[in-house]
Image (cartoon, rainbow, N blue to C red; front, side, top):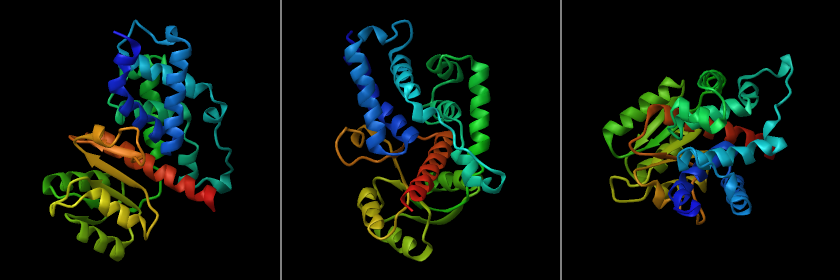
Length: 264
């Protein structure tokens, strides 16, 4: 089987990973394109002694790690040692291990293979990242979900991270009303709502009045990760794992705060 045929089914998920790692759709997609260009230029760089999905991520991380900007850390002082700054200083390799094992669902040994380190180092990096990410500033989270059990699961996960619930909306109308009443700092949105409306439309309307990060939840991520514009930067697949939700929330809040500082 050709490399193209082997990696094609994995590209939507690699884009998701790359966007979460870099913080934007444009930057994330650029790294994926760079990975594909590298494979076209040198097909022998694609490892044949490991499964294709692991090989693709390994090639991607070689490109990512070769960029100097991704290996830089943020300097700090005692006076600037806020929770947000501690999160900003999260080491790139710790963030890589954290996302590989939580968002992408790789086992510790698979993540070690991708990163070309041993399992003990992966465990140490994940623990470091989890500790640092937990320091972020708490916020109010709006959940847009029409399934009560799923909404309760999400609420529990959000509260375990130290955040508060701004409300749970089952319809487009309820979502807009809750945003107006509570000004949440993050939205978790299902795609299909109880009244037959679209969570995408609800989010689009919300974003016309407030600027906040959004995480979409869907059982069919391939319908959204098509390579066409626009696509969500942060996406969780149903059925979801609590660890994946926690990782995505932390990443969304992290990049949103960093983007606002740069824009200021």
